Length: 334
Image (cartoon, rainbow, N blue to C red; front, side, top):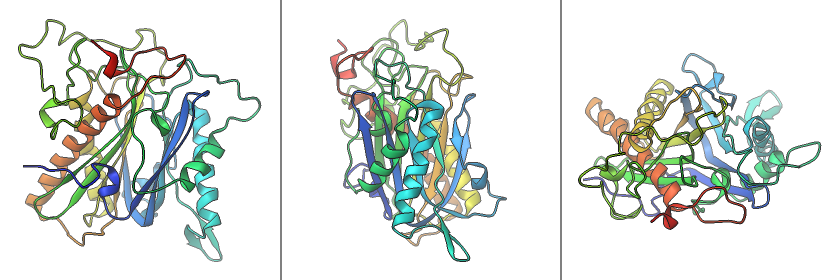
């Protein structure tokens, strides 16, 4: 039986800290995962409308093996500036990939679209995401807020506010796996128009309400409920990080990212659409010292999917109302 880590957050994975920075008036923000030591990293994109920075270098055949941080940001393409702020904060601390006498912080990033959510986006010449990125890096800690926080501040789903979610799982072999998701999909995370989460079969305790699945399923369970039918490509996305303290190669980290996408499919209906930019970064800190056997690797990849599904549900479950919201929060749904 799976059990959570002490915090039920991605920071239960040794070697990681998370920082949030957000602006209530803007209804947007940034979340950064900082690696205490460079972590083996990979990425898998399955949505049709991604927005990314420095993802090509994460492919197993490319040179850089490890990264210093990963950034999730609101702001659509403007939010890619957040990685520059995180880079600046890391460079100030002397952190980065050494090239002779220069240090280059390696900071891949992904963005979600939250420009039309009731927030004030009249920021003038330059968007605020570089400074939000710097602030998020400075705020990095083991404990952090989920729900309406960081990159999840302005996130929305079909019919409900989205949010930033996280979860962790302890495996029998001593390995920890954690997930972090900024939940902003075109689809729905609840069954039909009910309060029951699609991720319910994987819930541990009552971490997102304890309602289970409805029985019988409601007549609208299979309805394709979308945020907006005429959404432009790129207007929706769930961006996420799956992390473990197992010792993985870059290729194995790629498989971890692929497996974590199963969590999107288990938690959101529909997922991976042409109008979503669904993406998962994978990080392996290696701090457990455990190299999974072939059987243990299957367990690890299975847990990647379930942990991600739980993180998605927890992000929506924890969302809180704010002035000028366009959608209600889960806790207010009857």
